[in-house]
Length: 172
Ligand SMILES: Cc1cc2nc3c(=O)[nH]c(=O)nc-3n(C[C@H](O)[C@H](O)[C@H](O)COP(=O)(O)O)c2cc1C
Image 1 (cartoon, rainbow, N blue to C red):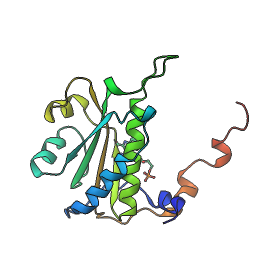
Image 2 (tube, rainbow, N blue to C red; image 1 turned 45 degrees about the vertical axis):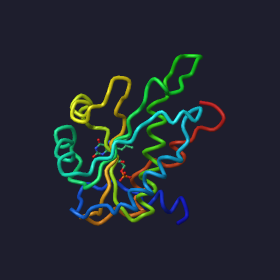
Image 3 (tube, protein in one colour; image 1 turned 90 degrees about the vertical axis):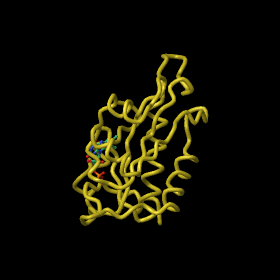
């Protein structure tokens, strides 16, 4: 599928069937994460895959993930993340977000629905899944089969700002 077509097709889904994500699809989602670019190719992240009933139950205490059958938490490895020497900015959120984006786009290509979730309780997640010091949960992404009609690819005409509103040419 043409990239722009795929990007317009992706939408946030908040109702899932109980159908599991097939292992071969999960493998491709992980592979899409693996090949994502990161600053200085640090690859300073871990992917916590959550799909057992027990683990999904634990996740319920930390976030509303709409009963999706598969969740992947992108966790930044802060000590190994590249930082900008000029001002010390640590780019862990940027790295984690390109990784999460790769996974979501691959899932869309595979016919899965998805949702990106940042509204989670970091302390609860850390405790429940034994995330050590030096690692920070950044993005929770969930995947599955939709139990509601997917949003239209045409929605961006109304749902998004116009190009004129977004683009500043040459200088602010
Ligand atoms: C960084 C990020 C964080 C988000 N966090 C949440 C969240 O915690 N809960 C939720 O229901 N949706 C969350 N979303 C989904 C957005 O609300 C959604 O992408 C946006 O409204 C545009 O809708 P669309 O994804 O259907 O195009 C998040 C999206 C992004 C990119």
